Amino acid sequence: MTVADIPSSLIRRWRDGDDSARDRLFSILYSEFATIASTLLRRQNGPVSLATSDLVNEAVIRIFNASDIEIADRTHLLALSARVMRQVLLDGARRRNRQKRRSLHVTLTDTHGGNLSDTADYEALERALVRLTAIDPDRAEIVELRYFGGLTVEEIAILKQVSASTIKRKWEAARLWLKDALEYDIG
Image 1 (cartoon, rainbow, N blue to C red):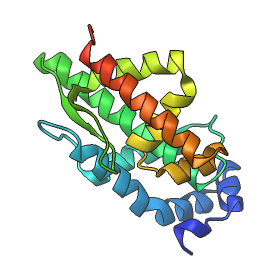
Image 2 (cartoon, rainbow, N blue to C red):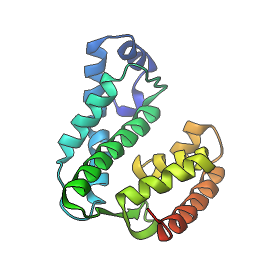
Image 3 (tube, rainbow, N blue to C red):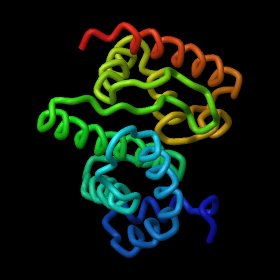
C-alpha cells in the first residue's frame, strides 16, 4: 500500500479505537512524518535538541493521545502532524529561552525556496502567526500547511477545495504580511 492509497476507512478505524489500524497508519506515514520533521529541524539555527525520529515520535504520541481530533484524510493528518511538530519545537525553544535567555532563530524559507525573511526568532514567528490567525485564519492555515507541513500549492488547494491560483495568491500575501510582522516585532 502506498501513502496515496491510504483508505479513509483506516483513519476511521483508528479514530474508533482500533490500535492495529493506528499502528498500520503510523508505519505507512512514517517516512512522510520524518520528511516533515527533518525539514523543520534543518530550519533551526543554533543547537538542535531533537533527532528527526524524536520529533516524529513526540508528534505521533501527541496526535494519537488526543481524543478530540477529527481527521478527514492523509493530507489532513500530515498537516496536523506538521502543526504538532512545530508546537513541539516551539515548546523546546521556549524552554531553552527561559533557561539561557537567548533567542532561537529559524530561516523562513518554504520547502520550495520562497523566503519569508532572512532569520527570525522562533517565538516572534509564533507571535506573528497568532496575530495573522486573528486577522485572517485562512492565510495562517495556508502558512502552516505550506511552510511547516511542506505541502505544495496544489495539495493545499485540494485540501481546502479551492483553486491553486487562489492558494498561491493567499500564500504570497501571507508571506509578505509575516515578513513585515517579523521586521517590526516588538515582543
